[in-house]
Image 1 (cartoon, rainbow over the protein chains, first blue to last red):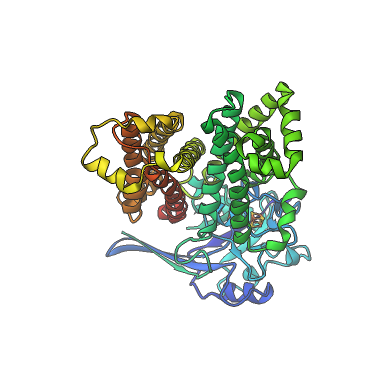
Image 2: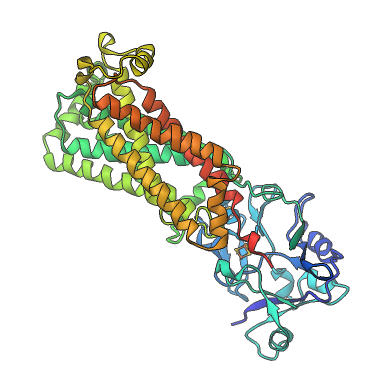
Length: 179
Length: 347
Ligand code: SF4
Ligand code: SF4
Protein backbone atom coordinates (compact mmCIF):
# COMPACT_ATOMS: atom_id res chain seq x y z
CA UNK A 1 0.00 0.00 0.00
CA UNK A 2 1.25 3.46 -0.86
CA UNK A 3 2.30 5.90 1.84
CA UNK A 4 2.32 9.41 0.41
CA UNK A 5 4.80 11.91 1.78
CA UNK A 6 6.22 15.28 0.83
CA UNK A 7 9.90 16.17 0.91
CA UNK A 8 10.68 19.89 0.84
CA UNK A 9 14.14 21.33 0.24
CA UNK A 10 14.49 24.31 2.57
CA UNK A 11 17.69 25.30 0.79
CA UNK A 12 15.74 25.98 -2.38
CA UNK A 13 12.53 27.49 -1.00
CA UNK A 14 12.51 31.28 -1.40
CA UNK A 15 9.09 31.87 0.17
CA UNK A 16 7.53 33.13 -3.09
CA UNK A 17 4.09 31.79 -2.06
CA UNK A 18 3.33 30.34 -5.49
CA UNK A 19 2.29 27.17 -3.66
CA UNK A 20 -0.18 29.16 -1.55
CA UNK A 21 -1.76 30.76 -4.60
CA UNK A 22 -1.84 27.45 -6.51
CA UNK A 23 -3.63 25.72 -3.63
CA UNK A 24 -6.18 28.49 -3.28
CA UNK A 25 -6.90 28.36 -7.00
CA UNK A 26 -6.96 24.58 -7.34
CA UNK A 27 -9.11 23.97 -4.26
CA UNK A 28 -11.23 27.10 -4.45
CA UNK A 29 -10.23 28.23 -0.95
CA UNK A 30 -12.37 31.16 0.21
CA UNK A 31 -10.84 34.60 0.69
CA UNK A 32 -9.21 35.05 4.09
CA UNK A 33 -8.37 31.34 4.51
CA UNK A 34 -5.44 29.21 3.48
CA UNK A 35 -4.54 25.52 3.49
CA UNK A 36 -0.80 26.14 3.13
CA UNK A 37 1.45 28.98 4.24
CA UNK A 38 5.04 30.13 4.57
CA UNK A 39 7.09 30.36 7.76
CA UNK A 40 10.54 31.77 8.36
CA UNK A 41 12.75 30.78 11.28
CA UNK A 42 15.89 32.77 11.99
CA UNK A 43 18.29 31.19 14.48
CA UNK A 44 21.62 32.17 16.00
CA UNK A 45 23.56 35.32 16.80
CA UNK A 46 25.01 37.70 14.22
CA UNK A 47 27.19 36.97 12.26
CA UNK A 48 26.37 33.25 12.45
CA UNK A 49 22.69 33.51 11.67
CA UNK A 50 20.71 30.77 9.93
CA UNK A 51 17.45 31.26 8.02
CA UNK A 52 15.01 28.49 7.14
CA UNK A 53 12.06 29.26 4.91
CA UNK A 54 9.40 26.56 4.87
CA UNK A 55 6.20 25.99 3.01
CA UNK A 56 3.86 24.34 5.52
CA UNK A 57 0.50 22.61 5.44
CA UNK A 58 -1.23 19.67 7.16
CA UNK A 59 1.56 17.16 7.85
CA UNK A 60 -0.68 14.19 6.94
CA UNK A 61 0.41 12.64 10.22
CA UNK A 62 0.73 8.87 10.49
CA UNK A 63 -0.66 9.14 14.04
CA UNK A 64 -3.22 11.89 13.53
CA UNK A 65 -4.87 13.22 16.72
CA UNK A 66 -7.36 15.11 14.56
CA UNK A 67 -8.75 11.75 13.41
CA UNK A 68 -8.82 10.05 16.80
CA UNK A 69 -10.66 12.96 18.46
CA UNK A 70 -13.33 13.35 15.77
CA UNK A 71 -16.69 12.31 17.24
CA UNK A 72 -18.42 11.59 13.94
CA UNK A 73 -15.74 9.89 11.87
CA UNK A 74 -15.72 12.86 9.47
CA UNK A 75 -11.95 13.08 9.87
CA UNK A 76 -10.53 9.88 8.48
CA UNK A 77 -7.50 8.27 6.91
CA UNK A 78 -8.03 7.67 3.20
CA UNK A 79 -7.18 4.17 2.00
CA UNK A 80 -5.04 5.69 -0.74
CA UNK A 81 -1.66 6.76 0.58
CA UNK A 82 -2.82 7.21 4.18
CA UNK A 83 -3.92 10.78 3.44
CA UNK A 84 -5.95 12.42 6.24
CA UNK A 85 -9.22 13.81 4.87
CA UNK A 86 -12.46 15.38 6.13
CA UNK A 87 -15.87 14.30 4.90
CA UNK A 88 -17.73 17.61 5.00
CA UNK A 89 -21.14 15.90 5.08
CA UNK A 90 -20.25 14.15 8.34
CA UNK A 91 -18.53 17.10 10.04
CA UNK A 92 -20.56 18.91 12.72
CA UNK A 93 -18.03 21.73 13.14
CA UNK A 94 -17.21 20.90 16.76
CA UNK A 95 -13.62 22.12 16.24
CA UNK A 96 -12.12 19.32 18.33
CA UNK A 97 -9.77 18.54 15.43
CA UNK A 98 -8.65 22.17 15.25
CA UNK A 99 -7.79 22.05 18.94
CA UNK A 100 -6.13 18.64 18.57
CA UNK A 101 -3.75 19.58 15.73
CA UNK A 102 -0.42 20.83 17.11
CA UNK A 103 0.32 22.52 13.76
CA UNK A 104 -2.93 24.55 13.61
CA UNK A 105 -3.25 23.14 10.11
CA UNK A 106 -7.05 23.09 10.01
CA UNK A 107 -9.61 25.86 9.80
CA UNK A 108 -13.36 26.12 9.73
CA UNK A 109 -14.58 26.70 6.17
CA UNK A 110 -17.13 29.53 5.96
CA UNK A 111 -19.70 26.82 5.13
CA UNK A 112 -19.16 25.37 8.62
CA UNK A 113 -17.05 22.25 8.19
CA UNK A 114 -13.40 21.61 9.07
CA UNK A 115 -11.07 22.01 6.13
CA UNK A 116 -7.38 21.42 5.43
CA UNK A 117 -4.80 20.23 2.89
CA UNK A 118 -5.77 17.01 1.11
CA UNK A 119 -2.42 16.45 -0.66
CA UNK A 120 -4.68 17.24 -3.68
CA UNK A 121 -5.82 13.62 -3.62
CA UNK A 122 -8.18 14.35 -6.54
CA UNK A 123 -5.14 15.20 -8.67
CA UNK A 124 -2.98 12.40 -7.27
CA UNK A 125 -5.65 9.85 -8.21
CA UNK A 126 -5.27 11.06 -11.80
CA UNK A 127 -1.52 10.59 -11.64
CA UNK A 128 -0.74 14.31 -11.16
CA UNK A 129 1.29 16.00 -8.43
CA UNK A 130 -0.45 18.18 -5.81
CA UNK A 131 -1.02 21.70 -7.16
CA UNK A 132 1.59 23.29 -4.86
CA UNK A 133 4.27 20.81 -5.94
CA UNK A 134 3.50 21.25 -9.61
CA UNK A 135 3.89 25.06 -9.61
CA UNK A 136 6.95 25.50 -7.39
CA UNK A 137 9.40 27.58 -9.49
CA UNK A 138 12.46 26.36 -7.55
CA UNK A 139 11.36 22.70 -7.62
CA UNK A 140 11.88 22.54 -3.88
CA UNK A 141 8.83 20.30 -3.28
CA UNK A 142 8.70 16.59 -4.01
CA UNK A 143 5.71 14.30 -3.62
CA UNK A 144 5.62 10.53 -3.76
CA UNK A 145 5.31 7.12 -2.17
CA UNK A 146 7.63 6.47 0.77
CA UNK A 147 6.96 2.72 0.50
CA UNK A 148 8.51 2.65 -2.98
CA UNK A 149 12.29 2.57 -2.41
CA UNK A 150 12.86 3.75 -5.98
CA UNK A 151 10.68 6.85 -5.68
CA UNK A 152 12.31 10.29 -5.73
CA UNK A 153 11.12 11.03 -2.19
CA UNK A 154 12.65 7.81 -0.82
CA UNK A 155 15.93 8.61 -2.54
CA UNK A 156 15.98 12.17 -1.16
CA UNK A 157 15.26 10.96 2.36
CA UNK A 158 18.22 8.63 2.31
CA UNK A 159 20.59 11.10 0.67
CA UNK A 160 20.04 14.32 2.64
CA UNK A 161 19.64 15.24 6.32
CA UNK A 162 16.10 16.24 7.15
CA UNK A 163 13.71 17.07 9.97
CA UNK A 164 9.99 17.03 10.57
CA UNK A 165 7.94 19.58 12.52
CA UNK A 166 7.35 19.00 16.24
CA UNK A 167 8.18 15.27 16.18
CA UNK A 168 8.01 15.47 20.00
CA UNK A 169 4.24 15.99 19.73
CA UNK A 170 4.04 12.33 18.73
CA UNK A 171 1.94 12.76 15.58
CA UNK A 172 4.51 11.21 13.21
CA UNK A 173 4.34 13.96 10.56
CA UNK A 174 4.91 12.92 6.94
CA UNK A 175 6.30 16.13 5.52
CA UNK A 176 10.07 16.14 5.65
CA UNK A 177 12.22 19.25 5.39
CA UNK A 178 15.66 18.77 3.84
CA UNK A 179 18.29 20.93 5.50
CA UNK B 1 18.00 33.75 19.48
CA UNK B 2 15.18 32.27 17.44
CA UNK B 3 12.73 34.45 15.53
CA UNK B 4 9.69 32.82 14.00
CA UNK B 5 7.54 34.49 11.32
CA UNK B 6 4.26 32.99 10.14
CA UNK B 7 2.64 34.19 6.91
CA UNK B 8 -0.90 33.05 7.62
CA UNK B 9 -4.02 34.54 9.10
CA UNK B 10 -6.71 31.90 9.33
CA UNK B 11 -9.74 32.88 11.44
CA UNK B 12 -9.91 31.20 14.91
CA UNK B 13 -6.20 30.31 14.71
CA UNK B 14 -4.13 33.40 14.09
CA UNK B 15 -2.57 35.31 15.69
CA UNK B 16 -3.56 33.11 18.67
CA UNK B 17 -5.68 29.97 18.81
CA UNK B 18 -9.23 30.69 19.95
CA UNK B 19 -11.27 27.88 18.44
CA UNK B 20 -13.51 27.66 21.50
CA UNK B 21 -15.19 30.75 22.92
CA UNK B 22 -17.60 31.10 25.89
CA UNK B 23 -19.83 28.19 24.86
CA UNK B 24 -17.42 25.37 25.73
CA UNK B 25 -16.47 26.61 29.24
CA UNK B 26 -20.17 27.12 30.00
CA UNK B 27 -20.94 23.62 28.70
CA UNK B 28 -18.09 22.08 30.71
CA UNK B 29 -19.20 23.94 33.84
CA UNK B 30 -22.84 22.92 33.50
CA UNK B 31 -21.86 19.35 32.58
CA UNK B 32 -19.70 19.10 35.71
CA UNK B 33 -22.42 20.64 37.86
CA UNK B 34 -25.00 18.18 36.55
CA UNK B 35 -22.55 15.31 37.12
CA UNK B 36 -22.18 16.43 40.73
CA UNK B 37 -25.95 16.73 41.14
CA UNK B 38 -26.35 13.19 39.79
CA UNK B 39 -23.77 11.68 42.13
CA UNK B 40 -25.18 13.46 45.19
CA UNK B 41 -28.74 12.54 44.14
CA UNK B 42 -27.76 8.90 43.66
CA UNK B 43 -25.95 8.64 46.98
CA UNK B 44 -28.75 10.42 48.81
CA UNK B 45 -31.39 8.21 47.23
CA UNK B 46 -29.64 5.13 48.56
CA UNK B 47 -29.49 6.51 52.11
CA UNK B 48 -32.78 8.42 52.00
CA UNK B 49 -34.63 9.52 55.09
CA UNK B 50 -37.82 10.79 53.47
CA UNK B 51 -38.59 13.31 56.19
CA UNK B 52 -35.33 15.13 55.85
CA UNK B 53 -35.73 18.30 53.79
CA UNK B 54 -32.11 18.08 52.76
CA UNK B 55 -32.65 14.62 51.31
CA UNK B 56 -35.58 15.86 49.26
CA UNK B 57 -33.55 18.81 47.97
CA UNK B 58 -30.77 16.41 46.91
CA UNK B 59 -32.96 13.67 45.43
CA UNK B 60 -35.67 15.69 43.75
CA UNK B 61 -34.91 19.40 43.44
CA UNK B 62 -31.29 18.73 42.41
CA UNK B 63 -32.16 16.35 39.55
CA UNK B 64 -34.96 18.64 38.33
CA UNK B 65 -32.54 21.57 38.22
CA UNK B 66 -30.01 19.20 36.63
CA UNK B 67 -32.40 18.51 33.74
CA UNK B 68 -32.72 22.25 33.05
CA UNK B 69 -29.00 22.93 33.42
CA UNK B 70 -28.04 20.02 31.19
CA UNK B 71 -30.38 21.27 28.48
CA UNK B 72 -28.83 24.74 28.82
CA UNK B 73 -25.33 23.20 28.59
CA UNK B 74 -26.22 21.19 25.52
CA UNK B 75 -27.70 24.30 23.93
CA UNK B 76 -24.39 26.11 24.58
CA UNK B 77 -22.58 23.20 22.92
CA UNK B 78 -24.97 23.35 19.98
CA UNK B 79 -24.31 27.09 19.62
CA UNK B 80 -20.59 26.33 19.39
CA UNK B 81 -20.99 23.97 16.42
CA UNK B 82 -20.19 25.64 13.14
CA UNK B 83 -22.02 22.99 11.06
CA UNK B 84 -25.09 23.00 13.28
CA UNK B 85 -27.61 21.17 11.17
CA UNK B 86 -25.38 18.13 10.94
CA UNK B 87 -25.44 17.66 14.72
CA UNK B 88 -27.41 14.42 14.34
CA UNK B 89 -24.28 12.92 12.81
CA UNK B 90 -23.01 12.52 16.39
CA UNK B 91 -25.50 9.71 16.85
CA UNK B 92 -24.72 7.85 13.65
CA UNK B 93 -21.29 6.87 14.93
CA UNK B 94 -19.53 5.80 18.06
CA UNK B 95 -15.85 6.67 17.91
CA UNK B 96 -14.12 4.94 20.85
CA UNK B 97 -11.02 7.18 20.65
CA UNK B 98 -13.02 10.40 20.71
CA UNK B 99 -13.98 11.76 24.16
CA UNK B 100 -16.60 13.94 22.47
CA UNK B 101 -18.27 10.87 21.03
CA UNK B 102 -18.29 9.21 24.46
CA UNK B 103 -19.77 12.41 25.89
CA UNK B 104 -22.53 12.56 23.29
CA UNK B 105 -23.61 9.01 24.14
CA UNK B 106 -23.24 9.49 27.93
CA UNK B 107 -25.47 12.57 27.71
CA UNK B 108 -28.23 10.37 26.26
CA UNK B 109 -28.31 8.33 29.49
CA UNK B 110 -28.17 11.35 31.79
CA UNK B 111 -31.73 12.52 31.07
CA UNK B 112 -33.61 9.30 31.99
CA UNK B 113 -31.39 8.71 35.06
CA UNK B 114 -31.97 12.25 36.39
CA UNK B 115 -35.68 12.02 35.66
CA UNK B 116 -36.02 8.69 37.46
CA UNK B 117 -34.24 10.07 40.51
CA UNK B 118 -36.46 13.16 40.55
CA UNK B 119 -39.67 11.13 40.20
CA UNK B 120 -38.88 8.75 43.05
CA UNK B 121 -39.68 11.22 45.84
CA UNK B 122 -41.36 13.97 43.84
CA UNK B 123 -44.76 13.84 45.64
CA UNK B 124 -43.06 14.38 49.02
CA UNK B 125 -40.81 17.15 47.74
CA UNK B 126 -43.41 19.09 45.76
CA UNK B 127 -46.86 17.99 47.08
CA UNK B 128 -48.69 20.79 45.24
CA UNK B 129 -47.48 19.48 41.88
CA UNK B 130 -48.28 15.88 42.80
CA UNK B 131 -51.86 16.90 43.68
CA UNK B 132 -52.37 18.40 40.24
CA UNK B 133 -50.70 15.54 38.38
CA UNK B 134 -51.77 12.34 40.17
CA UNK B 135 -49.75 10.14 37.82
CA UNK B 136 -46.62 11.40 39.60
CA UNK B 137 -47.87 9.74 42.80
CA UNK B 138 -48.52 6.49 40.92
CA UNK B 139 -45.01 6.50 39.45
CA UNK B 140 -43.40 7.33 42.80
CA UNK B 141 -45.43 4.60 44.58
CA UNK B 142 -44.49 2.10 41.89
CA UNK B 143 -40.75 2.84 42.26
CA UNK B 144 -40.76 3.00 46.05
CA UNK B 145 -42.59 -0.34 46.30
CA UNK B 146 -39.67 -1.95 44.49
CA UNK B 147 -36.42 -1.40 46.43
CA UNK B 148 -34.36 -2.96 43.64
CA UNK B 149 -35.47 -0.26 41.24
CA UNK B 150 -34.61 2.42 43.82
CA UNK B 151 -31.14 0.94 44.27
CA UNK B 152 -30.76 0.68 40.48
CA UNK B 153 -31.70 4.34 40.01
CA UNK B 154 -29.29 5.44 42.76
CA UNK B 155 -26.40 3.42 41.38
CA UNK B 156 -27.13 4.49 37.79
CA UNK B 157 -27.05 8.16 38.80
CA UNK B 158 -23.76 7.69 40.62
CA UNK B 159 -22.12 5.79 37.77
CA UNK B 160 -23.36 8.05 34.97
CA UNK B 161 -22.52 11.12 37.08
CA UNK B 162 -18.92 9.96 37.53
CA UNK B 163 -18.64 9.21 33.79
CA UNK B 164 -20.08 12.62 32.87
CA UNK B 165 -17.89 14.51 35.34
CA UNK B 166 -14.70 12.80 34.24
CA UNK B 167 -15.58 13.13 30.56
CA UNK B 168 -15.78 16.94 30.82
CA UNK B 169 -12.12 16.91 31.89
CA UNK B 170 -10.95 14.17 29.53
CA UNK B 171 -12.42 16.16 26.62
CA UNK B 172 -9.64 18.69 27.16
CA UNK B 173 -7.10 16.30 28.70
CA UNK B 174 -6.97 14.18 25.54
CA UNK B 175 -5.70 17.12 23.46
CA UNK B 176 -1.97 16.48 23.26
CA UNK B 177 -1.62 19.54 21.05
CA UNK B 178 -2.39 21.90 23.95
CA UNK B 179 0.20 21.22 26.66
CA UNK B 180 -1.77 22.83 29.50
CA UNK B 181 -4.71 20.48 28.95
CA UNK B 182 -2.61 17.41 28.37
CA UNK B 183 -2.94 15.85 31.81
CA UNK B 184 -4.92 12.91 33.17
CA UNK B 185 -5.56 14.99 36.30
CA UNK B 186 -8.07 17.12 34.39
CA UNK B 187 -10.72 14.35 34.51
CA UNK B 188 -10.77 13.98 38.33
CA UNK B 189 -10.26 17.75 38.73
CA UNK B 190 -13.39 18.56 36.75
CA UNK B 191 -15.26 15.74 38.53
CA UNK B 192 -14.47 17.15 41.97
CA UNK B 193 -15.04 20.70 40.83
CA UNK B 194 -18.45 19.52 39.55
CA UNK B 195 -19.14 17.85 42.90
CA UNK B 196 -18.16 20.96 44.85
CA UNK B 197 -20.35 23.23 42.71
CA UNK B 198 -23.26 20.78 42.99
CA UNK B 199 -22.96 20.53 46.78
CA UNK B 200 -22.70 24.33 46.94
CA UNK B 201 -25.79 24.76 44.78
CA UNK B 202 -27.83 22.31 46.85
CA UNK B 203 -26.62 23.82 50.12
CA UNK B 204 -27.52 27.27 48.79
CA UNK B 205 -31.01 26.05 47.92
CA UNK B 206 -31.34 24.53 51.38
CA UNK B 207 -30.33 27.81 53.01
CA UNK B 208 -32.65 29.82 50.77
CA UNK B 209 -35.63 27.54 51.35
CA UNK B 210 -35.23 27.61 55.11
CA UNK B 211 -38.37 29.40 56.41
CA UNK B 212 -37.97 33.15 56.57
CA UNK B 213 -37.64 33.47 60.32
CA UNK B 214 -34.77 30.99 60.22
CA UNK B 215 -33.06 32.39 57.17
CA UNK B 216 -30.12 34.67 57.94
CA UNK B 217 -29.78 37.82 55.85
CA UNK B 218 -26.61 38.62 53.94
CA UNK B 219 -26.08 41.73 56.09
CA UNK B 220 -26.34 39.47 59.12
CA UNK B 221 -23.71 37.27 57.67
CA UNK B 222 -21.34 40.17 57.13
CA UNK B 223 -22.00 41.46 60.63
CA UNK B 224 -21.47 38.09 62.16
CA UNK B 225 -18.26 37.71 60.20
CA UNK B 226 -16.89 41.02 61.41
CA UNK B 227 -18.26 41.48 64.91
CA UNK B 228 -19.72 38.31 66.27
CA UNK B 229 -17.78 35.61 64.61
CA UNK B 230 -17.06 33.82 67.86
CA UNK B 231 -20.70 33.39 68.89
CA UNK B 232 -22.46 30.15 68.10
CA UNK B 233 -25.74 30.36 66.14
CA UNK B 234 -28.03 27.69 67.49
CA UNK B 235 -30.61 28.71 64.86
CA UNK B 236 -28.40 27.35 62.10
CA UNK B 237 -28.25 23.89 63.55
CA UNK B 238 -31.60 23.35 61.80
CA UNK B 239 -29.78 23.38 58.48
CA UNK B 240 -28.39 19.92 57.88
CA UNK B 241 -24.63 20.40 57.70
CA UNK B 242 -23.80 17.39 55.51
CA UNK B 243 -23.76 19.32 52.23
CA UNK B 244 -21.47 22.02 53.58
CA UNK B 245 -19.21 19.32 55.04
CA UNK B 246 -19.20 17.46 51.74
CA UNK B 247 -18.54 20.69 49.86
CA UNK B 248 -15.51 21.40 52.02
CA UNK B 249 -14.14 17.92 51.31
CA UNK B 250 -14.70 18.34 47.57
CA UNK B 251 -13.06 21.78 47.60
CA UNK B 252 -10.04 20.41 49.47
CA UNK B 253 -9.65 17.56 46.97
CA UNK B 254 -10.11 20.00 44.09
CA UNK B 255 -7.35 22.20 45.50
CA UNK B 256 -5.09 19.15 45.79
CA UNK B 257 -5.82 18.12 42.21
CA UNK B 258 -5.07 21.64 40.93
CA UNK B 259 -1.76 21.31 42.72
CA UNK B 260 -1.09 17.94 41.08
CA UNK B 261 -1.94 19.38 37.64
CA UNK B 262 0.58 22.18 38.08
CA UNK B 263 3.26 19.96 39.67
CA UNK B 264 2.82 17.48 36.81
CA UNK B 265 3.43 20.23 34.26
CA UNK B 266 6.28 21.85 36.16
CA UNK B 267 8.15 18.56 36.28
CA UNK B 268 7.48 17.80 32.59
CA UNK B 269 8.88 19.18 29.30
CA UNK B 270 9.74 22.81 28.60
CA UNK B 271 6.43 23.40 26.78
CA UNK B 272 4.49 21.98 29.73
CA UNK B 273 6.43 24.16 32.14
CA UNK B 274 5.66 27.14 29.94
CA UNK B 275 1.99 26.13 29.93
CA UNK B 276 1.87 25.96 33.74
CA UNK B 277 3.52 29.39 33.78
CA UNK B 278 0.47 30.81 32.01
CA UNK B 279 -1.54 30.10 35.17
CA UNK B 280 1.14 30.61 37.78
CA UNK B 281 2.70 33.90 36.70
CA UNK B 282 1.50 34.57 33.14
CA UNK B 283 -1.44 36.47 31.69
CA UNK B 284 -4.01 34.20 33.36
CA UNK B 285 -2.37 34.24 36.80
CA UNK B 286 -4.43 37.08 38.29
CA UNK B 287 -7.76 35.49 37.39
CA UNK B 288 -6.55 32.04 38.38
CA UNK B 289 -5.22 32.98 41.82
CA UNK B 290 -7.91 35.51 42.74
CA UNK B 291 -11.10 34.00 41.33
CA UNK B 292 -10.34 30.27 41.15
CA UNK B 293 -8.03 29.56 44.08
CA UNK B 294 -8.84 32.50 46.38
CA UNK B 295 -12.52 33.37 46.02
CA UNK B 296 -13.53 30.07 44.43
CA UNK B 297 -11.90 27.62 46.85
CA UNK B 298 -10.06 29.10 49.87
CA UNK B 299 -12.56 31.77 50.98
CA UNK B 300 -15.63 29.46 50.77
CA UNK B 301 -13.63 26.77 52.57
CA UNK B 302 -13.01 29.14 55.48
CA UNK B 303 -16.58 30.50 55.52
CA UNK B 304 -18.13 27.04 55.43
CA UNK B 305 -15.76 25.87 58.13
CA UNK B 306 -16.90 28.72 60.37
CA UNK B 307 -20.54 27.91 59.52
CA UNK B 308 -20.02 24.32 60.51
CA UNK B 309 -18.50 25.43 63.81
CA UNK B 310 -21.63 27.58 64.30
CA UNK B 311 -19.44 30.64 64.53
CA UNK B 312 -21.34 32.34 61.73
CA UNK B 313 -24.70 31.74 60.11
CA UNK B 314 -25.22 29.63 57.04
CA UNK B 315 -25.68 31.91 54.03
CA UNK B 316 -25.63 31.50 50.29
CA UNK B 317 -22.36 33.45 50.07
CA UNK B 318 -20.05 30.39 49.95
CA UNK B 319 -22.39 28.71 47.45
CA UNK B 320 -22.20 31.70 45.13
CA UNK B 321 -18.42 31.84 45.49
CA UNK B 322 -17.96 28.12 44.77
CA UNK B 323 -20.30 28.28 41.77
CA UNK B 324 -18.54 31.30 40.27
CA UNK B 325 -15.14 29.75 41.06
CA UNK B 326 -16.15 26.59 39.16
CA UNK B 327 -17.28 28.63 36.15
CA UNK B 328 -14.11 30.75 36.13
CA UNK B 329 -11.97 27.59 36.42
CA UNK B 330 -13.45 26.33 33.13
CA UNK B 331 -13.03 29.72 31.43
CA UNK B 332 -9.41 30.06 32.58
CA UNK B 333 -8.44 26.51 31.63
CA UNK B 334 -10.11 26.67 28.20
CA UNK B 335 -8.52 30.05 27.41
CA UNK B 336 -5.06 29.33 28.86
CA UNK B 337 -5.07 25.84 27.28
CA UNK B 338 -5.58 27.36 23.84
CA UNK B 339 -2.76 29.80 24.52
CA UNK B 340 -0.39 26.95 25.38
CA UNK B 341 1.37 25.55 22.35
CA UNK B 342 4.04 23.16 21.12
CA UNK B 343 5.02 25.74 18.51
CA UNK B 344 7.25 27.37 21.10
CA UNK B 345 9.48 24.34 20.47
CA UNK B 346 9.72 24.86 16.67
CA UNK B 347 13.26 24.83 15.24
S1 SF4 C 1 -1.11 18.13 10.65
FE1 SF4 C 1 -2.86 18.40 12.01
S2 SF4 C 1 -4.62 18.20 10.65
FE2 SF4 C 1 -2.88 17.32 9.57
S3 SF4 C 1 -2.96 15.12 10.04
FE3 SF4 C 1 -1.55 16.10 11.52
S4 SF4 C 1 -2.85 16.56 13.27
FE4 SF4 C 1 -4.23 16.17 11.56
S1 SF4 D 1 -14.91 19.73 13.35
FE1 SF4 D 1 -15.68 18.08 12.01
S2 SF4 D 1 -13.87 16.95 11.35
FE2 SF4 D 1 -13.29 18.18 13.13
S3 SF4 D 1 -13.57 16.83 14.90
FE3 SF4 D 1 -15.47 17.98 14.69
S4 SF4 D 1 -16.76 16.69 13.40
FE4 SF4 D 1 -14.68 15.90 13.19
